[in-house]
Length: 170
Image (spheres, rainbow, N blue to C red):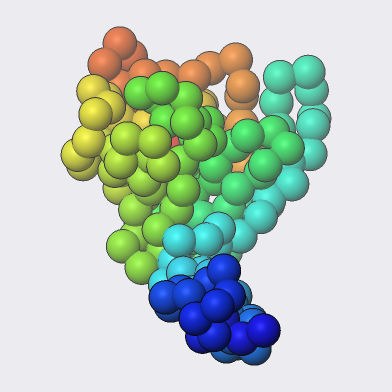
């Protein structure tokens, strides 16, 4: 029975026939797939992935980034950023409520998915519910590598001078 048949259970239904319904459904699925591709192209995805090498119990080593950009080490929950000739390392979590941060390439900023706090590439707070900048790990250079010390995490409101110097010139 067709959905447009008044004796059917779907009388007055706006879906029409099964063929029409599945045609619309496949169009919706295709639109969602394209929107995800567009979202990635517009920069809501990760720019690069990184894999840190453990060189001690509390230290990780990453190659020095060749150009400005963002890399995320999902396993270690570290964000590595090269921005204006400096390299920074941040925890992946927003300092407000530990929600994973996302890099928005099109806007050139980080954003918290939960409450919308926004940060510049160097971790400086722009707007939102957070009350401070992104936390920074101490970084140093060892040859062609950036070494991240996981025991030295600086908050801008309690360790301002350490936070300010926790970037490595490259």
